[in-house]
Length: 177
Image 1 (cartoon, rainbow, N blue to C red):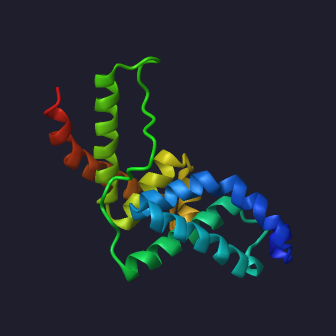
Image 2: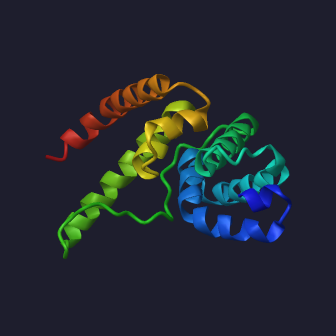
């Protein structure tokens, strides 16, 4: 990123490749829309280029990048509310037997859709924390940098999000047993 900050456009491509999958997944989970996620992904790296002179080399790049992505998502939410639908194009990867039966696969897929739908209904700050922590495996300290808040606040968002998810999912998942 230091080279990008100095205006070397070619140095942006390795950053795009390195962060593409994880960042696109984050944006899609935030927006709930596959196509809008791809548009915002492009807007994020356009914003990285435009704001390259504001990057501080002492600051880790990943939280800075995700902060830009979250701001792009927030701007998109202001223009149009997020779609609270599960992502159909996303592959489901739940831990099941090495050779799952069709029934196990169907249950895992249905569970993943229920979870994705519940996460999509969370308020944006809580959704961001859950997605960054669970799917991006980002430490709370880095999430606090992304959200530009205190780590305790991030932990509070996570607590409230998990409570909301539990309230929403327990009745639906309990009926399957």
